[in-house]
Amino acid sequence: MASKILVKDLMSVNVYVFENESSAQEIVSTMSKCDVDFVIVVQSGKPTGIITERDVVVRMVEQGLDPKVVIARAIYTNPLVTIEESATVEEAAKLMEEWKIKHLPVTRNGKIAGMLTYLDITFNVSELIPAMKELYRSSK
Image (cartoon, rainbow, N blue to C red; front, side, top):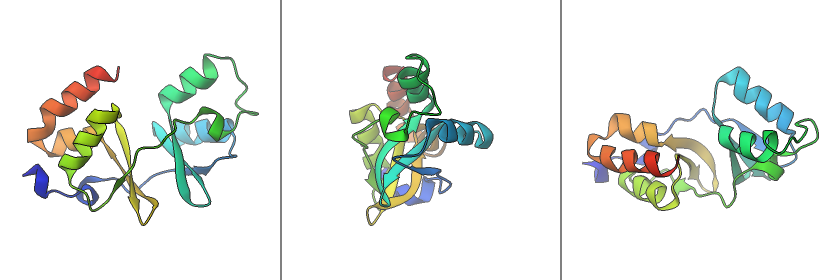
């Protein structure tokens, strides 16, 4: 059944997007106010990276960097692994397992269209729960 469910059917479309030069302060403030654990970073509309809560902690806070002077591209995860919205959820799960990622940006014609997370898959596609459990354990 998972092979028939498309990524676009499960993805969330509310994705916060920032430019490469955006300040970490602005990004962290948005993450806090909007209660999100990731944002996408773009350059000229094309996705270049993702910033997760973990990225903020490991690449900025732990190093004692000032969020007012740090820019997005200094703390994002890159290369950015993405998937087209027309792909199947099964393909997405395999990609997430292979790259050990919990957030998978979804694209349409090379631009961000949404986000698929391991929780989206876990709560909606029961036959993929074992794979998502393993992903969760391996990415800690």
